[in-house]
Length: 251
Image 1 (cartoon, rainbow, N blue to C red):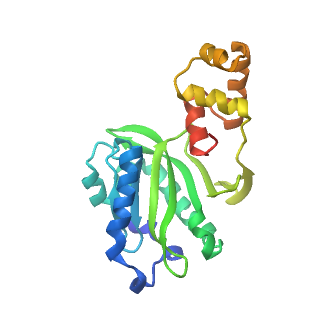
Image 2 (image 1 turned 135 degrees about the vertical axis):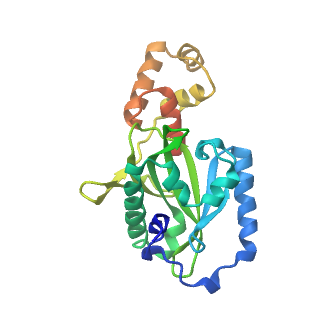
């Protein structure tokens, strides 16, 4: 068996091929391409029936120095070539446990969930820690994922893992422990209006002194706001805080 085939497991085998309307796939690709164009997000589409990539955006973060066409041609071979060998077993484990979790979700709710996790990719030999999110685009009638949308961004953590299943519209999520091999229910932290204001103004490029002036507060108070934000989001600096808050839709 080709090692890349190990990512395509019985838990998500697409059986009802007669249901797959490939005449509408181009429409789906154009929509994702438009989203990529205006957001400049690094995105790609997986086809679990044909076991390949249907679309890869031109954002360089995920390309590892290759063209988008080359990464699309590689498909799942991309992971074998551009993920550190010692992390491939982690990706396979995430794949298995993610689909096992997913199959316990009622079919009618499955489009409302996404999985998020961190791993390294190799760009000219340099390891870059990225966050990877995957959500269904098209399902078969029995709830198997036919097409999936993936979004790649800079990770806000400093190590691999952080495997989470999120349900859109709720503050609860499930985190997977790779040691106990169990999922634990957790809650996304909430930010106060003051903390959101500090983050929003930081995103706009204002300094702490300028933020203090705009909010009619002292610089020391703004510093305390930032420290609370860092603690809540488990980050080290304002750049990571902005990324974490954006990823978790807190602002």
